[in-house]
Structures are given as C-alpha cells and as structure tokens.
Image 1 (cartoon, helix red, strand yellow):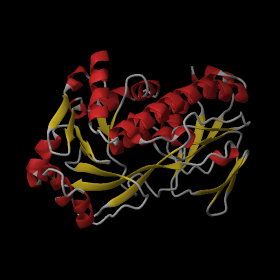
Image 2 (tube, rainbow, N blue to C red):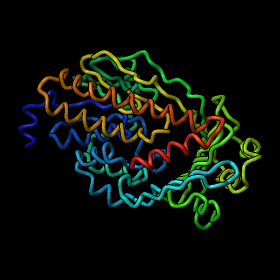
Image 3 (cartoon, one colour):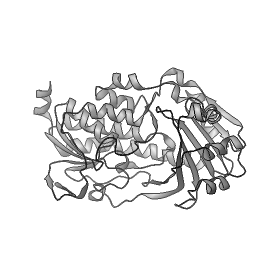
Image 4 (spheres, rainbow, N blue to C red):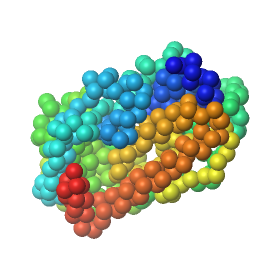
Length: 372
C-alpha cells in the first residue's frame, strides 16, 4: 500500500517547523502513508520543559486524528473518562453547575506529556531534530541557529503563536485578548491539599466573577494545575500575596487554591489571531494549529484542531499528485473550521468574564447539556 501511495503523493519529504502535537501528528500520519518528514524543534528534548496540563480529545477532531495515525488504542490505554468531570462555582464558593456526563466516554482526557510521548515513540528514529531552532524561513528553505540551511519543497509551520513561517503567508500578528493567566500548581494534591482536591473533584473546576477566575484541573502526576485568570493588563501581579489581595473577597476555599500553591508562578498572557484568519495560496508553504488560528483556550479546541489539521493535511498530500492542489484542498477545509472555533472561543471568553459571571457560562453549559 505504501508503494502505491508514494507513486501518487504530491511530495516525498515534508519539512515541519515545530514539534508540538500538531507537528508530531503530521509527521506520524505522513509516515503511515509512506511519506517521510523531518520535524525541527527548538526544545533540546521531549522533557526539556513542562508540557502543560490535561487535554480532552474530541471524537470529531483529536480522536479522529489519532485513528488516522494508528494510535487510538495506545491513547485509550492512558486516557481517563472520569477526568472530563466539570464543576462551576461563583466567587462565594457556591456550586452553580456540575457535569458528570464523562461516563459516556465521548471526550476522554490525557496528560499532554503522555500524548506527546505516544506520538514521539511512533516516529522513525531521526525524524525529530531536537535543539534545532529555526531563525529564517523562505518559501524554499529554512535556516537553523547553527547556520545550517535546509532546502525543501514544502514547509509546514506548526510552530505556534509566534510562528516563524506565518510571515511568508500573512502579515497578521497575535493580539492580546485582554486576559492573562497566572499558572500555579498544587503538588501531591490528594495527600497535601485534601480540601482543595475535593473542591476540584476528579476533573476540572471553574470559579468566575468580577472579571476574574480560578480554573483548576487534575493532572495525571498527582498535581492540580491552577490558572488564575485576570482581565486587564498583560503583566498582572504575580506574587502570591498580590494575587490573594486581588481575590480578597472570594470564598476562603477558593483562595486556598492560590495560598497553598507551590512557590513557582508563571505568567501566561492570552493572545489570539483575528477570527477568520486566512491567506492567499503560496506555493510550498502552509500552516496548522496555533500558527494558523491561534485562539484563547475557552473553546477547548486548540490541541484538537492542531491534530485534525495535521491529519487532514497529511491525507491531502498523500491523495494528490500535485502539491499546490493538495495544499489548496487542505486550506479550503481548515479555514472555516478554524474560524468557527475561534468565534466560539472569543464568545466564551467574553461571557466567562462578563459582569454577571458566572451566569453567562452557566447558560451556555445548560444549553450544551440540553443539546447532548
């Protein structure tokens, strides 16, 4: 089968800039179709930095990509249905909504680091070039920080918010959304922070009000990851005492998510590309994931869309004997899909931090539950 695909495919080797979930999924699905690729990743290894929290994989996107990659069974071995449990509180600590519909198995969750490991282990040795920072990109080549220049027929920008590849296609730049997260962790939560662990429950919790929020989620390593959400400037106070002052009138059990957190606090201002971002077709270059349609996390679609983009791009390349036709077919589907998710993300962010919060999010959750 691979021999037949090779004869039909538009190209025999793909250059992928960025080794996140999207870039790795693209490399894997190309491999299953008999097409080689090289992933250029600036991190020195898969464990060089914290890979982020837990992800829910949607049937129509992330799970579909994993099936196309031949990795669905490995994913299910490590995924948890229970982690999709969700709770919504107001700032007084009153539980306003709880969703325990995780038992239908529709959106199992997995640690990002575990999912990334599945993808890395599925690739032939040498596919990923670690510690390979791309500093310059042309439509036919990339240049690495060590001076190496690589000529190529196809460059895929899977390199996230501040993509080095995107300027070849578009002048658009990410814009600050008006929201910043400060990330904190509660380690060994079930034994060291039992009350907070009980508050968060088996999955995730949101507490919203007054243009602020506390978003917490279970991770597979025993940690609870907390995102302290603040509207306004891009550089919120990141001292623990400063944050506690900002949340001074919130319920004590909610403030404990800040007070009991580990020492390190990480600022994460939230940026987004314009809703409906697209570009005119440029030969030999395209984008996927955040490089193409960066949005806030309030649609829960970022990783899922990146993986679906990757799978559909790989399939288009394998099924067309002309590269530009393959890229045009991929982009024609990706543009409206990304725009729809970006609109949903922007709307959800707005209602989550509206003056009447958490009422807007409660209304949305009630509507979603009625439709399911």
